[in-house]
Image (cartoon, rainbow, N blue to C red; front, side, top):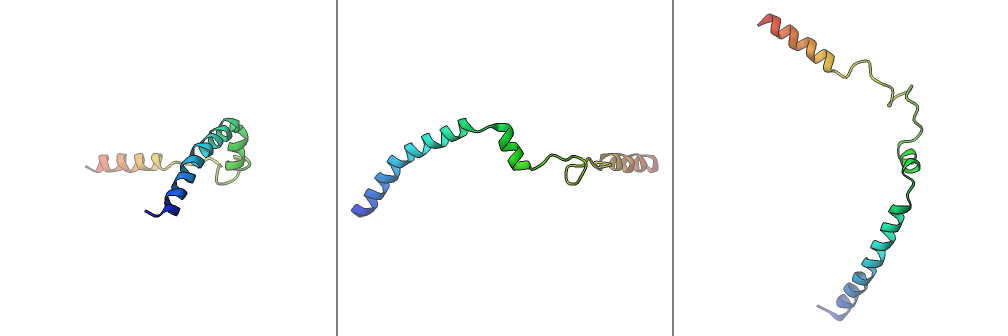
Length: 72
């Protein structure tokens, strides 16, 4: 291994610990509600895609099962 590669590896090892401390500090400082709002956007449950569906498909599936059972 060349001396440059060894030096590069030492630099990243020492930087890795410092970067991990920064990452942990940033995670501790996060406001969970604000982060969630930024990720999900406005929570308007009257419009798609958050509007509740009329059916999840489970009701239709159960209807098919009952129909198959009565035909058996």
